Amino acid sequence: MNVRTNGAGAGGFAERRYQRGLHNWRSKIRPILLVVFGPFIAAGLAVLVLDGHALSWGAGMVAGTFLGAWLVMRDAPPRYIETWRDGAEGERKTAKALRPLERNDLRVIHDVQARYGNYDHIAVGRAGVFLLDSKNLGGIVELHSGVPHLRRQLDPDADASFDRIRPCTLAAAARLKEDIEQRSGHRTWVQAVIVFWSDFPEDLVDDGRCVFLHGPRLRSWIQGRPERLSQVQVELIAAAVASIAEEAVAG
View (cartoon, rainbow, N blue to C red):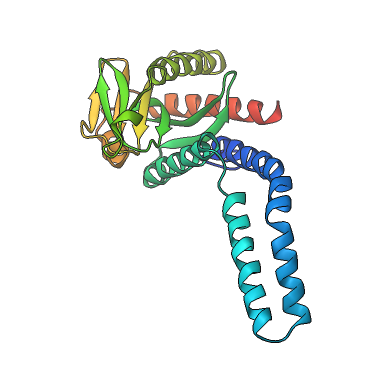
């Protein structure tokens, strides 16, 4: 039996944040669009309806131009909102990579609400328990002393470091471990895994507590892990994870 997500599936949390931000952006910009573009669109359509000759064609072009600009601006929210859509796409890529393993008895659940934020993906199998945090960053990811740095070749001034990714993922893995042990009565290790769907030349880095992994490598990496749990333990832990997810939905 596979443990499945409740709700929207992989990327659901990030997608909801994106849609909420997009809705707020549209509400904010709508009055501006009405004032700036509305009169041109209305005038162009009016002439198009009332005049059946060359003037109407010009009016139609004006109306179409301003309507096109309206639609472009309407669906071009600030970058911090777009980031949530990028995150959702990364989570969907991770879910797709894991799907074939579910047919081989890997239990996977996506987008579980937690006390702080959410768990992107929880995977349980004979190789152990994995908390996977998907990252879909725009650039080349490099690790410096365990800190992911994002390098943008076309704009070096836009390079950025993400010093909270590792500690936040480790803290989430510790909380998940505690929750599983309370529900299953079984002590287990939860491996923190950060999955990059950006360019990641190092491909795989394991620092002993956290694994940094290039997304295309995810499936083969899990398949190559040694078995740590019995099938009975897998079932107990998977049931505990399902309970965590159901409790989050009910709450």
